[in-house]
Image 1 (tube, rainbow, N blue to C red):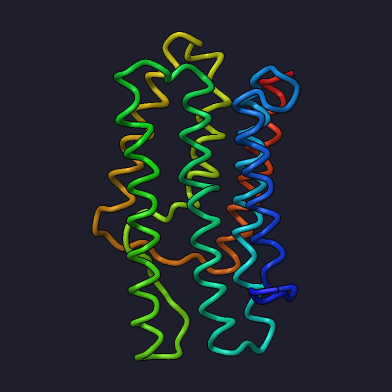
Image 2: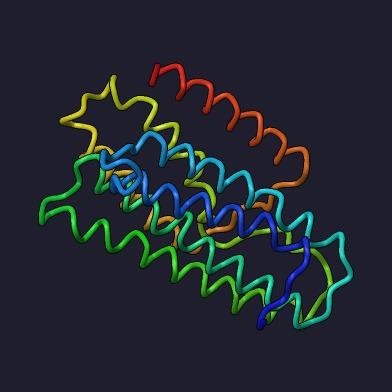
Amino acid sequence: MIGYYNYTVILTYIGLISSVLGIFFSLGICGGTPHPEYAVICLMLSGLCDMFDGKIARTRQRTECEKNFGIQIDSLCDLVCFGVLPSVIGYSIGMNCWADVPILVVFPLCAVIRLAYFNVAEEDRQKKTTDVRKVYEGLPVTSVSLIFPLLYSFRGDIGKELFPNVYGVVMLLIAIAFITRFKVKKPGMRTMLVFLGLGIIELAWLLYKLA
């Protein structure tokens, strides 16, 4: 079989599977009734997997081909997890008129532009230095795994009729942030643990609001 098969890509694949299930939930493929709330939880799970897949990958001595494969497969999965799934969730919650289509299309487009740019920049950076990356350019696409679940938890407070408009505005702002040239410090392990804690709190809050 083509590809590279070892434990360094397992979390990446689990994150992708979670997001594909999220797409199914959003469209009602699982059971016939759309469940965007389940899709949002899948989005959070994908974010959790992405948070630690790089740390796990660096525990193994990899060849250059394996490293490049890891970079490519991570970005391809990120496109589905954090580019496509949020758009499908948007459609599921009511962004389904002609005016919503540009936002639903632009969001994954900006995500793929940012991911492709990151791959090119990272390949060039690794040719010049072996140091670990310290900053990112533009808003990392994985940030949506915290932003959208938090936003969704207030769906009932905002109102189901107004919420699709609010969700669409947030999508557009995030899409712009994906391709805007500004620097974001790469989080260390302590910051990642803080994000993990926030994610757990968000999940608990979301489940409480859905109960």
